[in-house]
Amino acid sequence: MTALAATAPVAKRSAGFDFSKPVLLLFAAALCLMIVMPLGWLAVFAFTDKTGAFTLSNFSHLVVDAAYFDPLITTFKLAILSAVICCAVAAPMGWLVARTDMPLRRAVRLLVTASFVTPPFIGAIAWELLAAPNSGLLNQLFRDLTGAGSSSHLLNIYSFPGLVFVMCCYTFPYVFVLVANALDRMPGDLEDASSILGGSTWYTAARITIPMALPALAAGALVAFLEAMTQFGTPAILAMPAGFHTMTTKIWSLFEFPPHPELAAAASLPLLLLTIILLRAQHVALGRRGYAVVGGKNSEPRVIRLGGYKWLALGLSMLVLMCPVFLPYFALLNASFSKLASHLVSVNNFTLQNIRFVFVELSETDVAIKNTAILGVLCATLGTIFAVVIGYVTERKAVTGYRVLGFLASAPIAIPGIVLGVGLFFSYTKGPVVLYGTLWILLIAFITLTMPAAYQQLQSAFRAVHPELEDASRILGATRLRALWQITTPLLRTSVIATWCFIFVGVVRELSAAIMLFTSQTKVLSVLIYDLNESGDLNAIAVLGVFMLVITSAVVIIANNLPSFGARRARAA
Image (tube, rainbow, N blue to C red):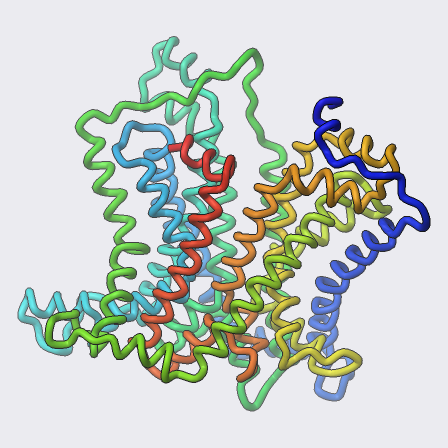
């Protein structure tokens, strides 16, 4: 500790009033306001009628009217099927990458990351290009190969199975990452003991490896369930043209003319409560179950030799990755340079006019890019500062009620984006503070939605820095804030930068909250793409989709190449 403290900046003894505690309390108050206020207004509108009187009729209307009850049932079916399919696909892939000698394991991980950073609504639009009944590229290929009539089609993406399929394409990475990481960390001692006692490879996997990975698989199933239940973009693009709604699209439709804000609030509360209950159930269930190896140094995870089957395993993994990565990216690139989005690029129909139209002729592009850049940088910067301060307060117990702050910082994980958007709409469309129609309301929404992951990452980073370094600085007269700025934060540089990148990517791809809060002057890239999909301009969408993917991929690559941040992933391969 002495050597480390000697290298840190030595703060001179400060004089006068210490502003540290008031500033920390100010951050705490702002966090409370960001989360409690929209949820409070959501509850008020849910339990009042148009005259402001208390009522429960909003909830009874949702149950009695099939137009509102059917989307709830559809949402449950979608979420359950997505969770089951994602686990069935992602768990074996995670095992192949983490525990076998399958070739190109690192490449498979990187490709899963590519599907992870792809905004789901971009993926849905790409599958429109591929599997629309009449114009989809795959359906055209099917008709060319079979000689079927023009009304025939192999795939129909505008259907409930099509919605489930696309939802799984961009949800299974969550399950894959959780399972693969759990298997990476799992020591091989118990598996070695099973082999020594005569257990076969598959017996050991069934009795040792799989049970130890079950908590991670259960967590992945819950994440997949919640993602499918709370997502707006994919259902809006695929379900509404097919003639049915999920809960998120129904909530959005309740703001169309004539608006029914009280019904939207009532429909949002069950979604919020169910999310909270499921997250709590996961915490209780997984909190009771854990595994530990007692003894000395753990052995490295066992690598299972697949023999000739390793190439089959690789082929199956690549076949899975065709759906979220290869085919959609091909469709977007093809539509970007083709005169007609439904035709393959050739010498005769190659064009750069789509790019010119989007970046030169379409006036909304400049506004959307400017707003997205401003919000991305501001949200990433302010969100990282918030996460640093709240992580510091909760880990160092700097203020009274730090446990409440930790809960509030994690609470937005239980708030679907569409629900937060509704709450913020109610909060800031009337006095005393009117923010609707400004970028400020989007800033609040994006910071709130990205806070849980940012907070959890930085709180874990704080645990790795011993408080004695800060104590030494404070003994020399530095305030808490100065010690945090000059001593602790520089030691967390990698985690801080990674958190900034994570928030920036989250802002660029966010649609659920933005669709509820934007105006013509505050439109962002995700909303512009959604609007263009409504008008059917698929070529322009493809250009903007590729542009968005380039931005998010570049940020992820930068984050993964930070010292000690990307190294962990490289070692895992």
